[in-house]
Length: 246
Ligand SMILES: Cc1cc2nc3c(=O)[nH]c(=O)nc-3n(C[C@H](O)[C@H](O)[C@H](O)COP(=O)(O)O)c2cc1C
Picture 1 (cartoon, rainbow, N blue to C red):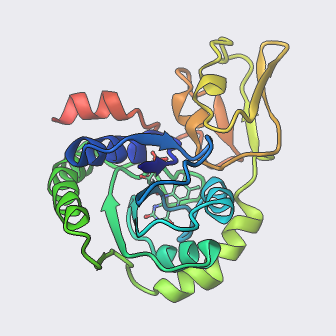
Picture 2 (cartoon, helix red, strand yellow):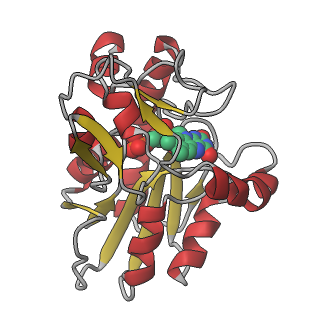
């Protein structure tokens, strides 16, 4: 079984690809865990050089006794020691761990924006190769780590991540430009954790946000913003980008 979490679709895309190659089933981390899985894969995005809160909650409750456990972490750039953070939350070691570069969806800080079309194309092409290699490793139950930790991984994961989680993984900075919002409800439908209610025709965030930015990226009129940093930033739509570049 492959358990996944995905905000904007990249990790689901990778999870589906891997499941096809391995003939495995897929299940979201928001549903219950089947305890008799012998081989378990976890596919999810890297957030702030660590694991999303949904993944943390899932692995703390489950994953007792499978015989081969691997993780595939999608990231826009680098993942620091995300695998170590995951292992600490699980209370056990991974048998194998991989990172896969996918289009970057983080836009909330100065200097961060979505990738150019060329960068997306390169990443989708590399994904094809990487996921085939990962599938081979899993079939052979290899004990490997193929990870892009990036520069200063320790500082990123153990100094910057706690600050990132504390100050930036919150929905309190989301706001809606009511003159642009057409009340289409796409933000609500795309939220993987049901954190958005539509009240008086506009979205309201309910304080159990995963921080994935699915609502921001899904809005057809860029009516949703995070603080004052995202007004001029791009939006990511996996299917649209993929059709354009491949
Ligand atoms: C809150 C947040 C934090 C992120 N932090 C990182 C990071 O530390 N390193 C990185 O390379 N990419 C980071 N990203 C980019 C995502 O990991 C990447 O785009 C991922 O493929 C998105 O997966 P998804 O579409 O399945 O949600 C971050 C994205 C978000 C929304």
